[in-house]
Image (cartoon, rainbow over all chains, first blue to last red; front, side, top):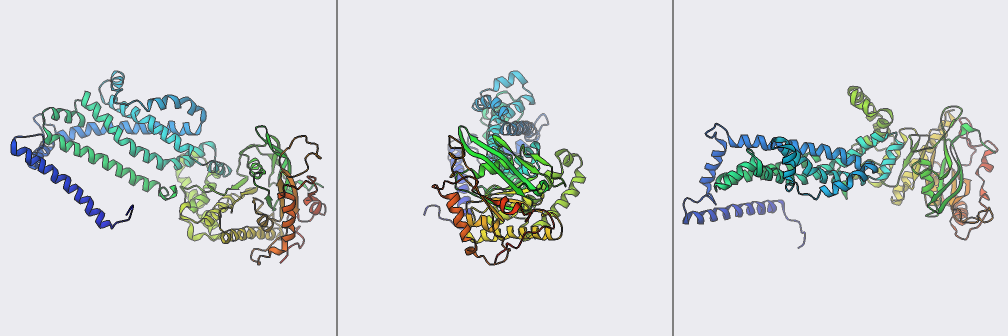
Length: 267
Length: 330
């Protein structure tokens, strides 16, 4: 009974069924709401949702397509911030894991900063970097940096000392032991860690856009929520979910491509 | 009687080691000849691995030194100050890089030894060509140890025996001055262990061939093991490290740790000859009572007779043209 394997076809059917139940539950709620108030926008029905999607994609009065404008702004902020945070934490984490003085120097502040919610520190970034792209980038970068750095540092410390000595007896210099030897060992764990910080990074970004943005996903969702225009809000949320899902999938694919050895060798 | 310098590959000179206040190695002196296969045995916890680490250079001796003699004619000695490419090592575990295939694992030594990060980065095209040559060399090497089919496998896809075989190839390809094996077959089943012991005997046979052809024997090896039979079977010489010896008589007022208490030649076996363990039952019994028996209390040098037995007569040197006398049995 417990953990008994099932047919792949059965698993697929169950998955489809749960999505179907979710959709029909929504349709039923929407139907009930519209029976009492035909103009209701809190739980839009399918035709309202379709109008909402069209209004996102079509040019508005100022000739701007919301989806394009918002995706450009939010995407730039997200990838710049995540990229900078990633680069910084790989550099710092590798050095901390390899060199004990560096670790002793950075560990206390980082373990403290890792516990500060970046959204709470929004005002700090606002004061230091203004309201432009810089602010969002800095916020995401510093938001993910402590966690990622500590993950990399811990992964480096798991590197078996036998392999370290082995590399040295094969003529590796100190730098060569760090790159490519230790780096290759850490890479799959780094990709796993990046998968885990995508969620928090999106939270930081959307929250900041809701508070101070004038374009972007968070800004649009806040604006349309105030007007209870849920036909626009729901598709935006769905898009964010799809984006997070896609990133997760892409990173897993990248891990399989770059580190085919990882997975089975964990056991 | 001291052998000529060029004959030596490695020498431990008065190696002492302390863990805090606890002394584990007391004046360990050990000379290893070029082309020799030395089996090092001892009770568990006696400091075999500590001695091996001192030789590798990862944990330098607190007192004394390890000297590696280089290939070049005069046999110039170089004091060990850290791990280096002239001493290869095979551990029981974690000897292979998990992120490299068998072929890449063997080739990685060539890369690390012959190229640098700036070279691989700034002279990328030249590096690519060199890399191809390295991989080809590694492939040929793996064919030689009958692992041609496993070339593209990652360590986690290989059996324990294959992994150790690749690890030995990985160390051999750099032609180090000496190869150290730290309980290499401890985690393997009996049949696989025998297979790998045969592989080592094949290397020993290559040494003998080289000497007959007037070349220097290519492989020198220390194998640390807790199995006496393995040491006698694979080695042409067995040394025992033990904490059971008469240290009071030697002038120490406190227990000074383990030292070499046994060092004698061992019979040489042909790789494919049937195993006749009766042939060395006497020696095994002798080692057990001298090295492994907690009640043993003899002079440290009483059974350290290797150089007296072989050195004075000039027999069995590591130099070409001077082959060992027919000690081979079977």
